[in-house]
Image (cartoon, rainbow, N blue to C red; front, side, top):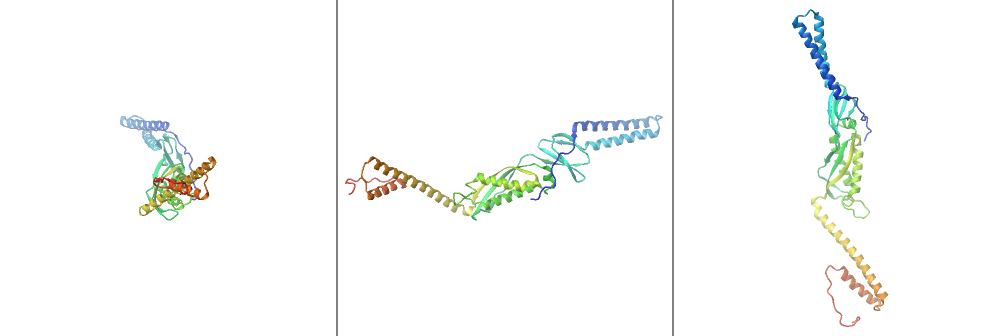
Length: 303
């Protein structure tokens, strides 16, 4: 993004209470002057006609000046700001809440500095493996630099919306939904790392608009309906394989412990063939899906 050409600074303003009192006083004084001039005319006083006209003209000018000055008053609520322009030139931003007064010839655009939410629609994209997935995200943001938000982009709200969708799509095509290798990042398995990368990319994209990204999160993440059933079977198969691997590892450890204990205690003397048979039987018992049916040997160990 190009560097900003304008930055926010505080506009010159004064307390609105004093300006309001002065404006009302000017209106009252102007009305009194006009009334005095009219009364002198109707009463036929001996004062010169020029003096009477001067009173009326001064009263009219004072009323007009006070009325124009009152147009410089601004009521600013907490979480709002006013971007001040004078004949098209940026003259600063008013962030102080309350009643403030600025040059009445300026134009003042209201802009909210409150925290906002933007939730994207459910987007359908292909992940790093080419599988179609659906995802949506919510972004928490606020305007940090009002000058950049007003003058660097055409519409900062639309800009945030478009850049958010672009960032979500870019993140989705960079990573797979599920990683085939354990060391790789995936959208489903590494949600915290992926959302942090999404926030970093969003900050870089919207920085030119004077927008600060507070937080970003995925709100929806799933395979597309056309491949959801196939991917569910794949996930189930992977879970079964992982469970079997853990069962086999545990069974091997138990068999090793049993043989070591038998040898250590000297319970029986087993040759290699009988050890192999014992290992086979124990592995079947420990790794089987169903309970083993015991077979009682009524003869000797070798019959």
